Amino acid sequence: MGSQRIDGGRDRADPARGHGEEHGMVSTSTRQERAAELLDRVLALADVVVRARRAAVPQLERVNPRHRRSALNLVDYVAVRSQDVRDLQRDLSGLGVSSLGRMEAGVMSHLGAVLETLRVLAGRAEEDVEVPGAGPEPDGPGLPGAEILRRNTAALLGPGRDGRSTRIMVTFPSEAAGDPRLVEDMVRAGMDVARINCAHDGPEQWAAMLEHVRAAEQALGREVRVAMDLAGPKLRTGPIEPGPQVEKIKPVRDSSGRVTTPARLWLGEADPGIDDDAPAVPVADAAWTAARTPGERLRLKDARGSGRTLRVLEATGPGVLVECSKTVYFATGLAVGAEDGTEGVLGELPALEQSLRVRAGDTVVLTRDLTPAPVRAGGPYRIGCSLPEVFTDAREGQPAWIDDGKIRCRITAVGPGEITLEVLQAGPDGTKLKAGKGINLPETDLRVSALTDEDRSHLPFVAEHADIVNMSFVRSREDVADLLRELERIGNTALDVTLKIETVGGFESLPPMLLEAMRWQDVGVMIARGDLAVETGFERMAEVQEEILWLCEAGHVPVVWATQVLESLAKKGLPSRAEVTDAAMGQRAECVMLNKGPFVVDAIEALDDILVRMEGHTRKKSDMLRRLNAWAPLVE
Image 1 (cartoon, rainbow, N blue to C red):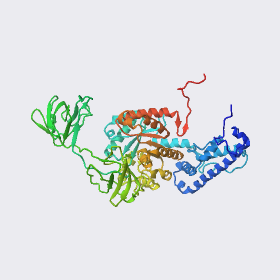
Image 2: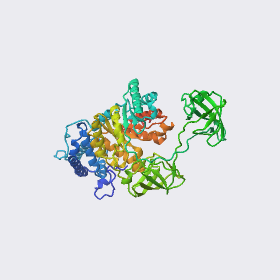
Image 3: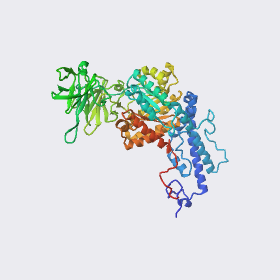
Image 4: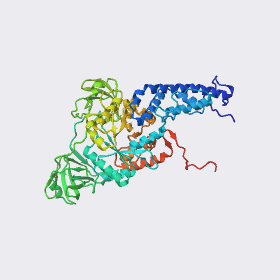
């Protein structure tokens, strides 16, 4: 049997090798020569780190003393990543030395250990080899990087749970303001951090949500942190003319067209205890609904002029539950006749949401004018744009994405009041362009503050009631400084800060933004993968989220893995296989965020189980080789 090769896979025809190496045997002298050569290369890399430290002194001096070691290590890591060290990594691995692949949490100590190993292998252990930056850190010895990260995570996100160090953050639906039982169920299922989005609801609803969280904490004896999102600047499509004020109900039919379940609807106020799935339409006269009785037949001509008969199932006084075996279109002002000859008149119904169906090759014009856009059968389509700065900063030829990347466009013209887009990609049958949908301009340098006037008005409430403020659309060191100045002005320096990375600019500016944020007491990062995927391109999203995880580990900064985790489970009650794998990968972050949905409690329970199972297998980039009981030993 031939000898195994241990040289790291270099070409066997390498003329620099001796005869023994061709047969997989490396002589002691050759190993020493390689180690000496690698020693010089690692020393050069360490020198790059030291020079970066010196250049960063002004920024490091501004950092909170609690984060100084972390900031220094962040500078070290960015310096190493400014070099292409792949060849060095391969050569170190070929010599059986650490390849620097897991050095994030402690860069200089890792480099120092590699240098000491190479000195021994090079036969120079007794020599006085100067190691740049070796020895104690400037502020003396301290906790290892992994311990600092654990400390920071507990300070920001609260204590972990038995068997699960990764926290679970959950976005509150509006219903959480009026349903304390829902909040308690979420905490019981495993929620560690409650997220309230300031883009929705208002202070009254937020206060109710917070009250329910604190009550659940007391009832269950569990600590729950509250994070509140600032909305940030809204780059969205403008309004579209409303459709008719119509409510349509239709029965369920089998494949033969027979009715299996009649259509149901509430006239007046719905009673969720009887039927919470049936829609409701208002009735102008409450006395008329109060006079109805079960079994009564009601008659009307619907919005299409079709005669229909409704049977009363339940009459609660404020509301009447009716059913019909045919499709019915209810409309504002429509009269419903009762058996006693009286009529009830339907009140104001909400208008149907309308959309513009766009296809590849169509033209879409974004306008400053936010007058509701007319609905038309063909292009060019015109629709408002919510952010005026776009018309100054956008440039011809830049890409644009609408509605989470469903519509891909290219800017073909920019004027003071209009931006013309060519639709490059949409669905095979076109894609609905709706009001209030996000617009992404990944190559446009938007000169707009991440902190809007609306955000500033919300900050006093957030600072008083929340534990964490999540800053949206953050893209620069100045954005971070702006938020910190505002919190200092309010007089609350105890509120923790999380930076939401959702743009290319935010990703590229993350190192200086973290150094700025480290002036504060506790800081975290959220990978907002929805907008970020659109901005970076879906094919690059996996790479970008890994780089954010690595950088934050170097800065000992906790990370929240967010957007569409177990989305199908939360919304439809059943996850996809890909979502389960994604949720398991989220264990490498310090926190995983779930979005709202009717099955959110089930999603929390499932995520808790997934994270507990993954805890024994991996932590960050390190595989944990726990005992596996799944496989029987090959040899008993």
